Image (cartoon, rainbow, N blue to C red; front, top):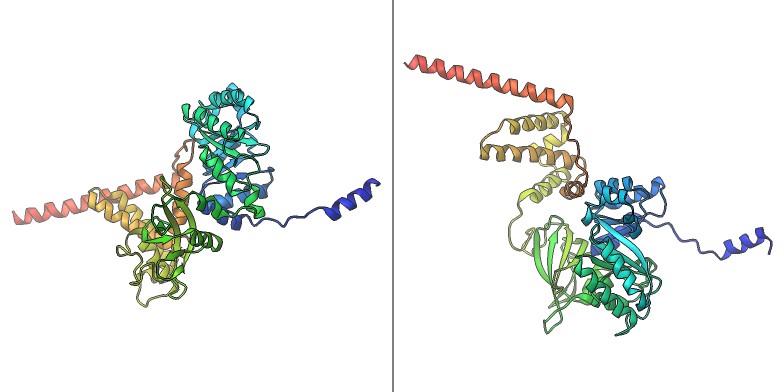
Length: 440
């Protein structure tokens, strides 16, 4: 057909996918931990989407970085690892710039399903092992890997054996679409990386967890430790395959009760849970649910945890949020929440006092004051302690040191504070001398 007509026919039959809700998708896929994000272009919206995922606290490994400066900048912004083509490290300048950050880079290369190419691919792993802690191997097609003794399954095991010699972890991708493929790849010792199958629905997110849990219990239940977002243990429960699948579908705290069967925590009491993460322990015989606890708490005795009373920073933030949502007459916290100037002045006052503190207990007390007033400021702004921790975690992933320059006004304020403290100390000393003279 003529070109215009051909385009019209193509447009009629082309599937137009709905735009992805990146934050919502990352919440679902992030249930199993680390995400790989591929930046297909260098547009502002793309990098804003990456930042939105980082703000959730989900660790991400990033593909699609255009320059080495960008790679370092993204690591500094909190990206866990950057994936680059293996040939990147052929350049001596590259090795000079990023060769020392071995734990933060992944080398990616294409591999053939044929066994005869294993020598070349083993050499590739050995070559990059000085500069990366992981490799990502892409196959055109992994079908057949689930067949015991198939060439591809044997090849993956051989590549993993080679990589272990150089302390390199092997990740494999390439059209993984079935649970049997996932299990077979895992048995070979390498880690499967699943892509489109999770978005298209060929695989459920729970299928990245359920097939790999082990139990020696006669009832086939899985011991499940429930913790909050600060990893405070809330309780010990049991799960089975159905309850984990349902929990991950609904992103809620759903378990298996040995009396009632499927148990959606909090449906009657209001103490529901928003599921944030499902992680297996090192032996894969226990499960950890990370949840955001709603209502009074997890325990049937109307306590936050089943083991202990609520305490620490988590308790502080929950108390402040309760004061914000349910004001109490005469509450100092409510007064601070309603009087910005008073709150800001107290924050500045306590920051000054911790600088002046010298003794251990005094420093601890002033630090508690600073933390309290900073927490009130956070609560007023709708910031949780988890949000603060996310910032700390991202900053801990920086690879380049900050200059640490001090702002001039802060230096001037510090000097003024020291002068006032010295003057105050001199006045106190003078009073003591005068009193001593009178006694004499």
